Length: 138
Picture: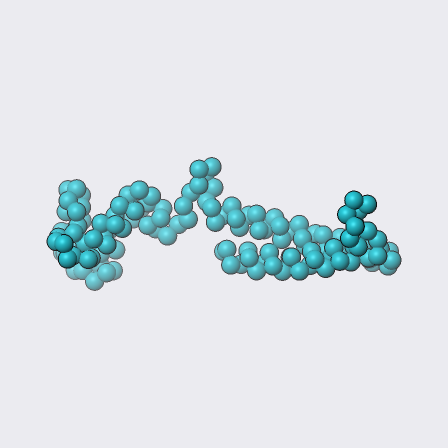
């Protein structure tokens, strides 16, 4: 198992000998809770159950979804893609303006009644929003 109960118990303040006794009790399928008022034992039982159900959660890693991708990683990839797309759009608008100075007043497409300069400004702002989201998800 990836999670070391003994190190966790020692980090909570138990001595090495006490931690060994608690680990032996757990491996004998006895609960760590000694009595009804033992809050530490109850907490450790809950931690042990969580870690047994999903060892990655106890080590601080992101849970794995049904499709095999980590949920945080998938969101980070999507935000990265959206950032790249919005950056490419405003760079495209700037390049068009350099090539033809009247192009910002053109419509983006015949089916999209928005001028290119507004489209580029929105993409510019979205690129910053997606960059901030990407940093927060890391």
